Image 1 (tube, helix red, strand yellow):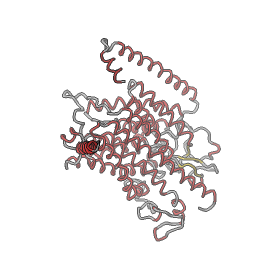
Image 2: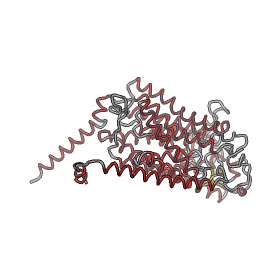
Image 3: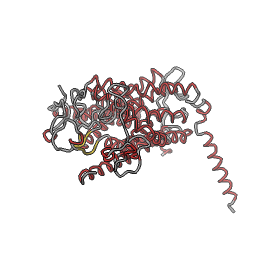
Image 4: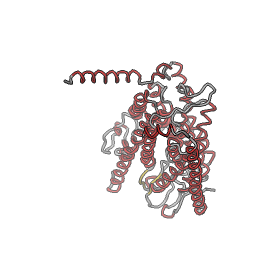
Length: 72
Length: 464
């Protein structure tokens, strides 16, 4: 048993194709990869919304905001 | 060189490794920027020089004995034989200098050895040396702001010119006993560079103790922010850049099946990993970028956009996938590169709070846990694949790689724990509390300020 079908290098390299593990699962990998990418955007948007909400609720008197502006 | 093709191959290989060395030097520029950025203003000079001087100290010791260890020790402590002859790697060898390939019988150099090594010895030595300095530098960042430089430099030489190169001979050499008996596979050094360095860093940190003020009276940890987060992140960016050279240097760029002299048949030349098993520069380029991206994306989410941890997780993603990045599919590399840093990030804070370990730059997590997990994951992902092009070697397995990962981490941890204990017992490991509070650059900064005052006063007096 081998995850890429090879158990020995006693081969002529001109006859060897892909050697990554779990060949045949490329479509599944692409689906997982796309899910990771889209999931990242969803999580990032949620985190960003929480951060903006927190910033909206901070410094109600504006004193620290003025200091931040002065600090450039 | 027997013919024009072998001459061109040799000169190309020589130049290839030379380029990797130049690129890998950026890792150390990055380490210096990163450590100085992470330290407080009163410790800059000490932090910079601590890391910088590891470069010459590991270089000269790697010339004297590190390079010999790599070729002499692949059989391990009696597992598969004794010491291996390494006439090209002893420091008095004629091949450790300018050499034009003629045999030197008085120096124990036959024609075949001279033909192979006369142009490759220096660049191959240098590529390994840059791995050595990297391994030592990984320890450096975690212990900033309280370690004595002299103690660190002893640890750096031990890690960089003895311990890591022993594990490289065992598990990162085409004839290493771990490859033969365990089927150990660690193509881009998750274990042999990163896990051992993480183990050594953790051992030093346990003996050294946390920085003053790191933990509150109730035992919870305070954040000690870097004085310059931008320098830290650019330093990490430079480390990534240097990793391009690191990855390329782990490969043999071009070799024929006849030169490998293993089981491969036919006439097709190939690039190989360090075990002389085929891979391609394209494959590792795919996988480096995908694992880096997986780590950056996961790090950004898990740390809620913290720049230091996002960059660190990018590096950890690469390290987590490095053991198998010669063979993974790019999406596999990306997913491994995303999952491993999340575990390491969580482990960093768990260990910090549970055991009061103050790792100033997260090096134990990024390199130690990341490298360990990377080797373990490769054991599962590459299960059953041949570890070597030579007959009689064990196949890659989860248990072979797990044992290998434990050996790597322990080979860094145990000896350095003992050495750190000895240094601590002699009061050589940590600076006194007064010096730590003043800052390690106190006298230097006082002299600097006095010099500025004096020269300014002198110049003001000359104004009419």
